[in-house]
Image (cartoon, rainbow, N blue to C red):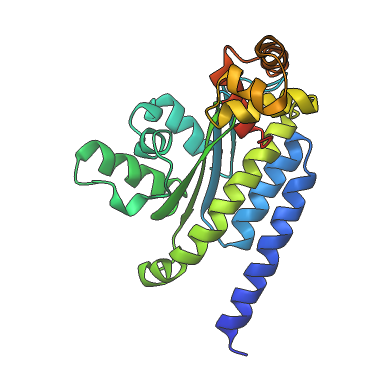
Length: 247
């Protein structure tokens, strides 16, 4: 077995361990600890998670967990770099991974921004992975490295696979730490049947014929389900069923 193969097997094992650890996290200190372990295992210069519009009783507008040096965080905030940062700008408007190498750093402001980031310990190469939550929240997991460019290019496909999956699990971990719990919505068999047929494009009258119910009874079940799902209308109720994997 070559050293490269052994290293790859170690990463695969650690990748699975990280996912298992993430599923058991319930508190903020554990979130920061796992983010740090992620940086260590993958020999990264930095790891940063940013979530906005998070749900839950303790959910605020923004949640940040990062391995950035305090001096860089202070500099970033003092200079209002969040207004310039292309990682945030593209990350929160994209659904695909973002390669920092694609940014146009010939523009003086961006060249200065990334130059300062490197001075404060952020890697020269980076990837960001957007997450879209079922409750309208958005998140971004960003990683950076100072490994040689050739090695970075070789590793990128494998890291993209790993970090896309880890980004989802880290986001779920943060939601739990923020106190969010998936709602336990219980629909009766009739309520679920009526919504399923609505999702198939059937009218209340057609559903009544299929289920041997009156149209009025079908609408009654649909309305009960809509209220349980806290939906504005029938279309919204069906969409919520899909998002909650109830259809």
